[in-house]
Image 1 (cartoon, one colour):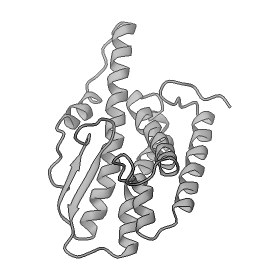
Image 2 (cartoon, rainbow, N blue to C red):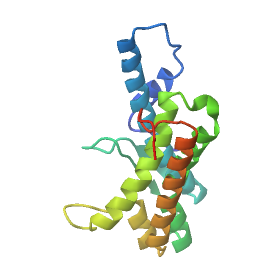
Image 3 (cartoon, rainbow, N blue to C red):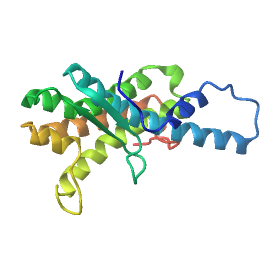
Image 4 (cartoon, one colour):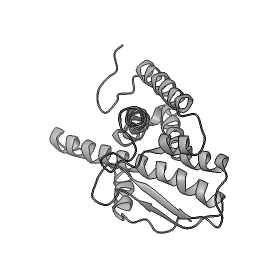
Length: 197
């Protein structure tokens, strides 16, 4: 549906969560927790890019390609697509926001499922969505498009499509703070760190 995925290790990450845990030593559990956490991080990145890909498909795009991680980097991704006609400003705004929306919906799903709260994999999906929100906002306000090769992020693209980047940023920060508060109340750690505030 989304074209070719350029990083086939995603299948291995998803499979790791299906392997039953044996009664292992603490060190083996720590290694497994670390592997699950990395898998959750990359799964969240894929979900973010899948949100962009789904929006592109809805708008009639062909040759949709998800690349995780982007060439020459790690812990990020990108989605490219060929559109049959130029997108309207509203469509471009939806396309720009769709990745963050998809990742936050996945994180919200984890938060709403008490059975997932103890899973390092699920915790990483949730934690990555929160970190991604904060990183996007921070980069928008601290980096300048065109300087040192920076092309911008989803908030920059939202602005270029005519959207209000400050309102979008405020919504991301407010949602992230609300999510952290709910994680603290439900005793869901943020990357193995219990939240106390």
